Length: 150
Image (cartoon, rainbow, N blue to C red; front, side, top):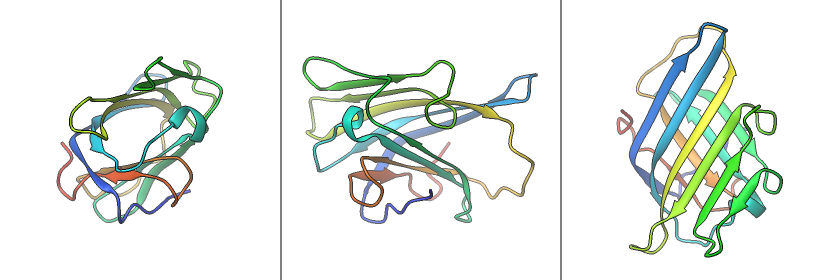
């Protein structure tokens, strides 16, 4: 399910943290800021997340559907997805997307993923990720710049 984000914005202050527990589970914590030109509704349209290495090989791609598990505040400026058992979207346990008041279209996000430890494979660092809110290749998206991830 990898997707393209060639005309999207850039993710600023991007952070990707990878951890492992003793039970063979890998955890990913992803957060950053992005600017999107179009209105968004992840609770209705869902969210796509892709993580790739510097060589462009997809390490992980997840589709989180809209609907069940999402909450929206009254002002439609903060969306929260919660699935502690990680059953809905291949390991995504929590998403928080909050629109900042200035500049318009600016969002802060945090995504947590738990999944079984993948098999070892060659990795070309730095990793980068893309996030799309809505349908594949038809909705606002943003990606980290090459060598921007820390």
